[in-house]
Length: 412
Image 1 (cartoon, rainbow, N blue to C red):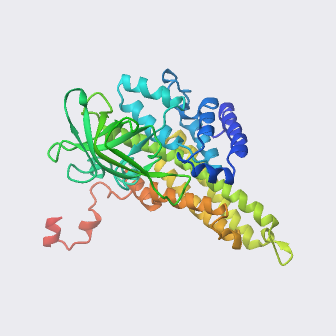
Image 2 (spheres, rainbow, N blue to C red):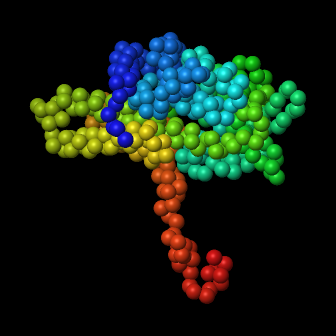
Image 3 (cartoon, rainbow, N blue to C red):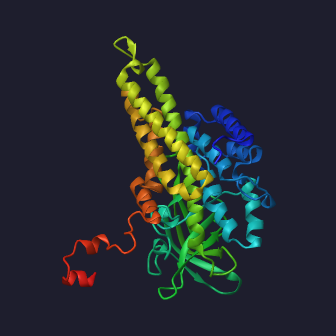
């Protein structure tokens, strides 16, 4: 692995930092999140048309740039530094890879060029609180219990035959950018309990009947969430038929999402740390800057090490997405600790709701609620790596604790 940025990656980094320094200050962020879409639509069009961000990782045959995850991670880090509210994660990280992996040729041709050009935003809708499991980050998505399990609950799909396609019924309560996305990828169960399976469906909110989208009041306004209610809503199956392996596609997409979220979290943590360092240089106590005190220096040094370690993990995951879950866990933990220290080191002003330190702190808390928590990310990664599996020929922990010859041992 070559850890140095290429000239193209350096150019993405430089261009984004200059643009967002001018267009996405704290006041700009607060104004953008209060719009109907929850982001600055003019800035989003500029990012899409001038820099090609939504299509960075999409193939050139579909209007993309044809680059990889690393280039998109560079963009996400810079957007995280600015706390930029945008549909990039939902569109380019969640929805586009699934359309590319599972969609028919006609679906890819119709949707991906519009996504790459920034004319269409999209997102993934899964039932309540199951996004991290659906993506294979905090649990095993196989079996599809997170989507309803073939019983009541979740989101259910039924075929209606002919050209009418499918109908969906159910609710997803925490859909990222769900209130503004022009296309919804909805995970739903079908087949009933005997032939239960999870499928993905395309729902076009502007034309489909029986859909209600409500923007929710969220902890982090820069990461807007929506409740999607589906009442016999018309939908199109993503893929050629209902035998596509949806859970097999969700896990690889989830690893890429984790790498990009990790890079974004690192950018947010780095920005919070830089602002805190600038503050302690000028804030005085007893006639000297508080940054000159040894205790403050030690705290800042610890934060710097955490952020740099998380940055290394994030870019390793962009190179090898299999490490995405662990990189995300490390980045979210670094972000939580850094933003909490930022509030503390800003003193009395840092505790006021209007101070910009709260924007960073709320991003840290909301991201861990939506994509974590950290201990579950690490636990699932350890389970996948087989760290808790007994060596060959050795008894499991449960049987080792049972007396030889006992009824319990026989049961084990």
